[in-house]
Image (cartoon, rainbow, N blue to C red):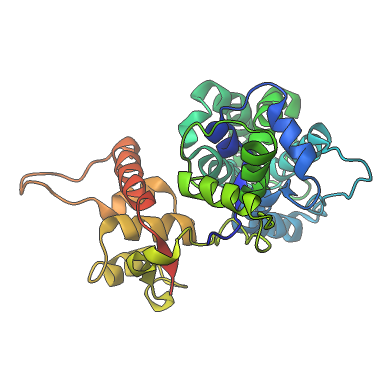
Length: 321
């Protein structure tokens, strides 16, 4: 038995080799109940942007815009471009209110969750988005800001970059997506991705042959994914007690977990549940291989270590105890 999960559309594209209009076709088919336009963006807002925006509102006497709401539409069509425009407008309102570092942290969460690697959005695109904002922030730092939002000409920050990646970030119900492409459309399964495995595809096809609905329950939020575990595999589940990580500083989490768990499990908990950045995770979990080794000073080494540990963790089933 597999439970539904909300996964980024990009993973479905990878699993089935979708091109052209096919991703939009899936959104149209699953809308409205199986599509969650702002799942990742809402999490980025709640975890990285909401508090500093609230602080800005209090300090500089400005009102903050509400987070965009999803709209029910009568026709069987998902308005991707409309949702993209709304979230880009909101993103830039956040840019006027919070620091570039905080803005980029939320952006990195969205990109890393969608593509599993923030380098997918290359440096030139990042420059388009953040370079001008950084210049404005430096200029503002040299004067006394009394009230109001930052004065930014947002046209220089290339909104097309955000508009282009938005469709990939839209979350969909994974079992419904599998049912559509494997059962209804008969597309071949190309490769396994997180949230769509060969066993899942076989499970959905078997249920369809038995006349059983493909989705057994409402999918959980993306930050608490359901365990993808068949009944015979449940003895291999790694259960991590909340007492070891919930509400604790990252160093305390590392120290408490190392007595019982491998670093790959610790990296998973820090990244997925505690939303710690990869460079920080790598720094926390770096170990000397030789006595004369000195701790690295570059972010790339730490990021590579975190990526390696998280790849190892993907082979495990890690759940909250």
